[in-house]
Image 1 (cartoon, helix red, strand yellow):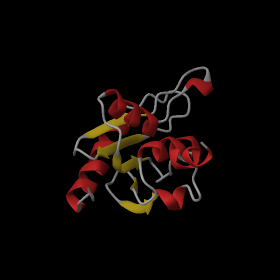
Image 2 (cartoon, helix red, strand yellow):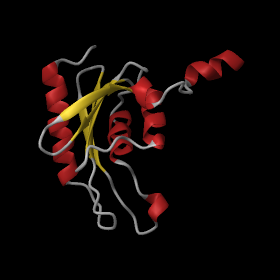
Image 3 (tube, rainbow, N blue to C red):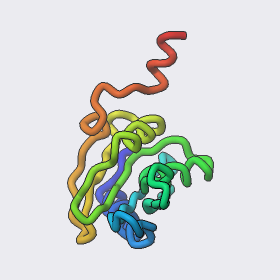
Image 4 (cartoon, rainbow, N blue to C red):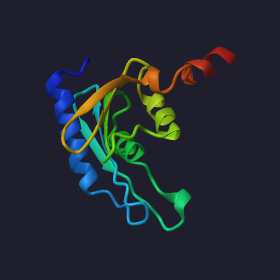
Length: 137
């Protein structure tokens, strides 16, 4: 399934809404993410900080965990919205790679609805995935 322009705009909208629900009392850097699964469902999440900083959760991983918890295992697009158009961290890129192909569109947006699109391959070149594990077995 290739996401349509309407799908892309809906994802950015849902990520923007998720950003407003983020729990970021320490950094005040709210992040919202939304993913589109191969069956057309959208799952969203906001970042969840913790006083013990390493225990915080990124919005992208919250959205992916929500989808997996509902039984979805293939991501066909992701949108992430931050105040300044920040991209997913390295850990989120690798988790996304577990559930998405290298040509999966990643929409990087801001709260005003503007966004640009990259492919996962551009964010995580020469990625490691389950296919690499199969080659050694």
